[in-house]
Amino acid sequence: MASKTARRRTGRRSTWAAAALIGIGLLVSGGVYAGASAAMAATEPSSATASTLTVEDGKKLFQANCATCHGLNMEGTPDGPSLYGVGELAVEFQMSTGRMPLQMQGPQAPQKPVQFTEDQIKAIAAWVQSTSPGPTYPAESILDGGGNVANGAELFRINCAMCHNVAAAGGALTEGKYAPALTSTSPLHIYAAMVTGPQNMPVFNDMTLTTDEKRDIISALMWMQQNESAGGFSLGSLGPVSEGLFIWIFGIGALIALTVWITAKSN
Image 1 (cartoon, rainbow, N blue to C red):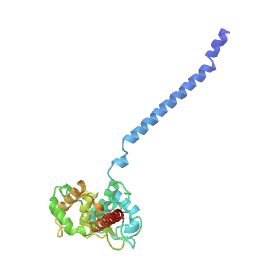
Image 2 (cartoon, rainbow, N blue to C red; image 1 turned 60 degrees about the vertical axis):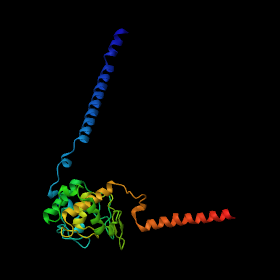
Image 3 (cartoon, rainbow, N blue to C red; image 1 turned 180 degrees about the vertical axis):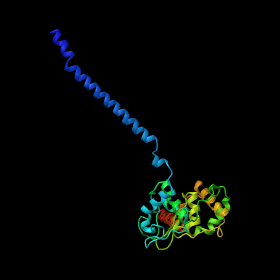
Image 4 (tube, rainbow, N blue to C red; image 1 turned 135 degrees about the horizontal axis):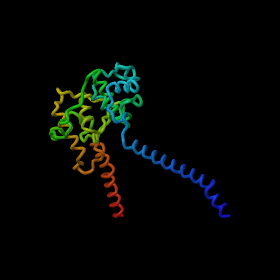
C-alpha cells in the first residue's frame, strides 16, 4: 500500500499540478504585462498627440471639414463666404468658440461645444494665414489687463454698449440676431472680435480704436468679470426693462396689498 501511494503522489497528480502552475504563471505574467502597458499608454502621450501639427496638416483638416462651405482653397461657395484675408485670428476665434463648423444656417452662428483640439485649430489657422494673410495674434501686453480701466469703460460705453449692454450682459438685435454677453469671454477673443468683426459686429481697426484703446477696453471688461456689481441686485443687467418690471410687480403689488389691509382694518 505504501508503494502504491508513493507512485500516485509522483504520477499524474504531480504532472497536472505542474501544468496548473505553469498556466497560473502565464496568466499572472500576462496580466502584469497588460496592466503595465495600459498604464504606460495612459501616462505617456502618443507621438501623434505630443507632436505639433504642421501647416500641411492644417490644410488637410480644412479640406476635410471646412471645404464643403468655404471651398477647397478658401474661395467660398454659395453656402459659405470666402476666407481670403480673414487671417488666423478670425479662424481661431470662430473655431475656438464653437461657432464653426456651422451646425445649421440661421440668422447668426451660435456658440456650441468646440469640435477640434487646440492643436488642430491652430494648424488650420496657420494654413489660412500662410495662404492668405490677415489679422494675427496680438502681443501679450495687450491682453494682460494692465490698461486704463476707467478709459476702457468709457470707450466701451461709447462704442459697444448699444449692442452688448453697458454691463456687457449682451442684448437682442434685429431679425433674430443678438450681441452675446461678454461676462466670460477671454481677452484674446475680445480682441479678436474687435479686429475681425464677427457676425454683425463692426471692425474696429487701429484708425477707429488704437491698440492702447483696445487694451483699455479689454482691461475694463476683465475688471467687470472679476468684480461683482456694487449696485445691489443686477436684475439681469437689462436696464429699464427688468427694473420697471420689478417696480411694477413688487412696488404696485405692495401698494395694492397695503390698500386692501387699510380697507380691511377700517371695516
